[in-house]
Image (tube, rainbow, N blue to C red; front, side, top):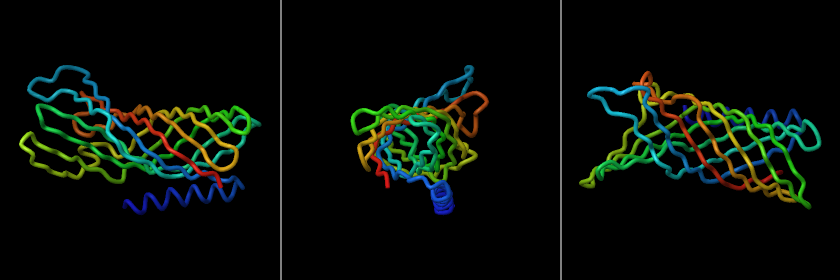
Length: 209
């Protein structure tokens, strides 16, 4: 399933780029994901909402810019992106790692500065998870790896808003910074009372062909 999701996403992006005669940009970089958790009401004899702090992961993929005017573009594509977070409670550590195929749809403004462009944009994203695990380490030093059950532990889909900025250098190289604000409750069981949302800060480089 993992390979099927990745292959399909990149095939769609390549097809769209070829048909529209648009040169794609390949991107890769580091993500700093976290999970924000909130509780709608007190639950007796049940664990409360737990925030997962920022951890590290990666992203890789590509985008295509469709020109709407001289400085305004519609940007879309496909990314394999790592999300999740980490938490420590009385010496017991847990780290959630989830991986999604994410499709952004950003409205992008390019501001010329010399031979470069400053990039400013925002828009929605939709993502489908294809893999994930939780790494547990007890205060005594015992370690466990547990595969995430999508549907029970977390929902498989996610959507939210992306905010992007960066620099498009004179020819091929781009520098990118982004922030993904999840709007969907990704929690599986107990989602009637507790809301978990992905938050992802990212930075990386791109190469325009």
